[in-house]
Length: 340
Image (tube, rainbow, N blue to C red; front, side):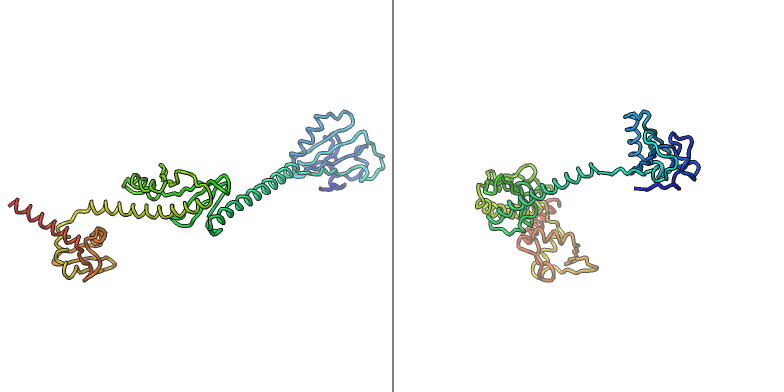
């Protein structure tokens, strides 16, 4: 709290107390001060000073008090001068007996309430976190899993596993069970093929269902930790099988949509004994034989369909490729004969 001395006081005849801490003539003689005690109230900011004046005016000071406030500086804005007319002082009293600086302690009640509230919340959060962790560890111990098998958890739920086929969410009402087990398999539904019916049929064989959001779950809750452990193993294997089936379906669709071209057929027939030579120029692979030439995209398609495989001089036709090539060329020859 600032302490006001004689040099900080000004005589100001426009004020009711006759003095100011902001403007006027410097105080040279204490006998120029009013004949009653002066209190200089210094507040933390101008708002607190305004509230103090509002309180004085609301209470009504009668003939006992007068007060002044002179705005114009950061110091003066937060100072209120109070004259206690009912507390007279002797004409020859020293400055210290006439003027005193009043301190208003700041209790920071709001800050204290906020602090206690935050401490209460922190304590509750810590207890809740400890309880949630204890429940998760109890379940992990019961199913024989390592403690780091739980990636994240909350109130009555946890996410287990670390890989694509090991990412499960379990929920419970008691650590003894029953449990629900759910796996997110949204990746299965991505792509242009609608394979939901095939995936659903496979899931139902293991007592599971796939909802509209591609979440896989058991139709019935798992009654205890042993059933949960077995359920996780079932879902792990099922998810792997689902992805394998998805891969097979997409490949089958790719094969069915890929038609043998005349150029591919000629190259496959020409290379069925010694293979089709491949070269790489500037990281771009090409295959050529008997004047026919194809690039990386065609090579990739032939490999994926299974009409050629790596071997020989670069690519070696497979039996499926030779059969498809012979069929294509025979069909082409028949068409040409009919048009002649």
